[in-house]
Image (cartoon, rainbow, N blue to C red; front, side):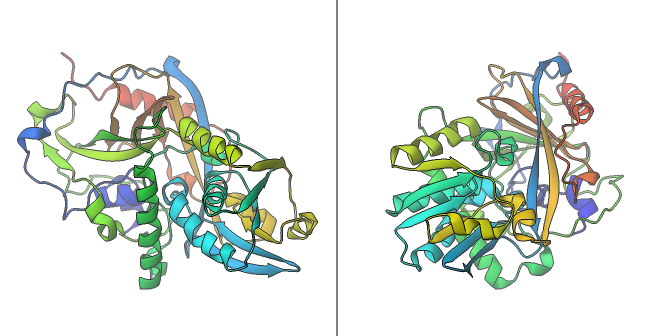
Length: 390
């Protein structure tokens, strides 16, 4: 799968590029069903003056996939758990489970976790549930951590590794992480604040879905990614092809999908509250070199520093992938997602606002987290023209 086709062309590629998960072609329903017609949709008030925030994050991509392994460092054992690309939130519980097995192999009853982002906080929480006493050390806390700027959709295969590195062993590991995470997220449905919920969305295209776009962006250095969807096809809802009378969009080809969404403020608060309730402690510390970890009292540590691992551990295998979202004022009745093929447009509605994602070819290898408001304004303006008038 070529990267230039991946960014804006095919449904499988869009799933792999962290825009959103769609059913595989084997699952997709090709004829409309009676239940496929949605209730009337409330059009989005897509205006630049509705933008209340523009945020950037840095996805920590590793060609070989996440680093989940133990390393001996003097008197301490460090269990690394970082490098999840755009799948950090989605794989957080399954990744934490694999890291916890390495922690438990040391016989430790106390654990120090370095980092308070998606992976660090979830790993700390799972360790507590296993009976460990846990302390988090971090330079930033939510919502300042970069993972708080994620779109918050279930995308477990998002920039998780290169196609060449997707060995059978890795595929098995990935499937185990995805399935365990999925189970955990389902247990959170219906909680106050809806930290996790299911949401319908609409995938739009100017040409039939099996046709290539007339033009695609220039090929950059971003690699080809593996197609892992079929490994968990039994837990992903099918997408459904809609007819023009079944949707309100000024686009000829539309599929309806269902995706899992994380309301990140509520979900992060749920994690933090549980962590503190069960005796957790968070200490503000900034580490510039691994030798500074020797001052910590814990003999077993989890390194969950994400993109920060490149500087702290000298891991040059980490590649930054810039991500940016604009957040619009929450709007009653807008409880769906959108994706417009070939127009660099993705939208998801969360409790804290309507997120509109802007992507560009230059995001690959770009560690600059400075918000580009003009890019977000352009994305919002593209969104404004999607609904049929009248």
